[in-house]
Image 1 (spheres, rainbow, N blue to C red):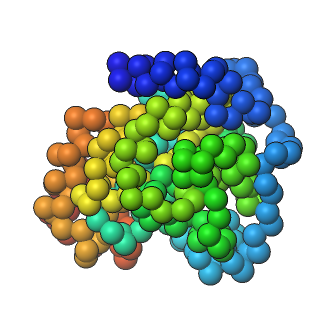
Image 2 (cartoon, rainbow, N blue to C red; image 1 turned 135 degrees about the vertical axis):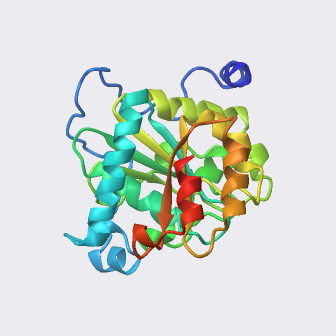
Length: 275
């Protein structure tokens, strides 16, 4: 935390106290979210067919797929409220284990409630892909704010879903670890975390075992959600992942993705998830 405070002070001294997103209004810490009128945020009407094709739950009225994410939402919200948390990082041990789809649908599910707003940030800066879940082509995003000083309010997108806002990743950048821990990024995280007391911020992060990004950035989240894939993620990969992050941030929970039934989860995996 000393490093965070030092970085924030350096950034404020260099750039003033207006903050990265000073156009956002403030609300009382005890008030419920007011009806949202998006002015500077770009609003888009994403067709339901596009969302359905990419398996975004907002395109489904009911079914096991929707129920699964509502259950996940309930579990996540209980942990967040118990600990007064509102910033969550979503990661996985390896590639293509479904973490981005989980992050998208968790954020969308949370935003369907009227008690909070949700901001989903694509922080997988080496391979940003959240925009693809909404059928968007390459678009500016977080990298453009961090490297080109594009105002963040010009990068936010409301895809016509509940109280949900998206900040794409923008272009791919190779030095993602250094950028994610820059004073400018840390100031943005603090701005996102504290500007609205009723807002939940979800960061889609890179795979844990393949870059240093998660270990470097996780201290600036409240907790991490770990996504594993049945039949792909090994016990050893899960064990290594838990050992890596246990000293930096709490594990909010573990999502077993692509599982037919929880009863079919291998006994060894169940044991690891219970630890």
